[in-house]
Length: 180
Image (tube, rainbow, N blue to C red):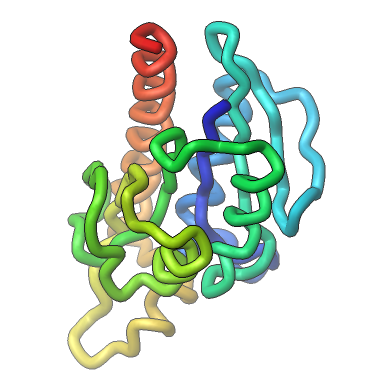
């Protein structure tokens, strides 16, 4: 079993914010992979799909960004998911709007959602797809930027980045299943 986690915040007021691009990517994956049902379990919204005979959990933690690790830890324990079978979709201000960068292991940087996951599961050795959301304007508070609406001038680029990340996940889980 593999687990794909999209980070975000659960309230409607956070829709269309840089911090919620992970949630949007999970919604795209649910549609693309034909997820039939979504359930709330272990502090997350979870959809189960099958790809080439392997179960894939698509997860949106509902614990808010800074506590995302609580949901992830519970699901790892419940489903006995191996760390290398986890992919996290996350916003990143240091990646150009619309670009996606894959990171396999290493520091989680200053992102509080990633810090929470690393603290709760005890490692940073998991795959993450960093979706570029642009940077705050000079002097703009970081929290105000990531929790505010995506600026109109980069909205299309960010949307394309989200779609690209979803496509990358599909390619990763399809390839991993072939080599397993």
